[in-house]
Image (tube, rainbow, N blue to C red; front, top):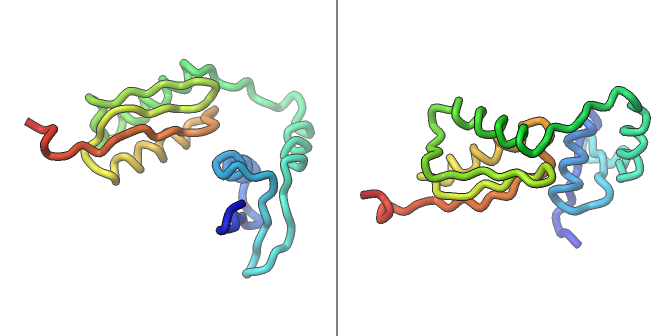
Length: 135
């Protein structure tokens, strides 16, 4: 059980609520406005939302397509040091491996990967290198 309650606002998109549920392994998200609980979204509500879209649902990207998109977006960033980074994707989960020069870059890479369509989760296995690694 978590000590901190994960909440969302009434205007939070459904996909973001689903991401919260996945990230924190929770089944319900209270909806809070002005410090008051005004509702709750459950997994069943998410399934109903998906079912209501029916044929409008998009075909999910393959793991290879997701990897290509993550790498393309990272390569487009002038701050990204990718020489010692590897990205793999399995079942929509992005795994990032290797070394980066700072904690800020590590976090930024995670955020870039999370924003790619089709990504269900990001596992950050990156290490911040120490000056001893640089020769």
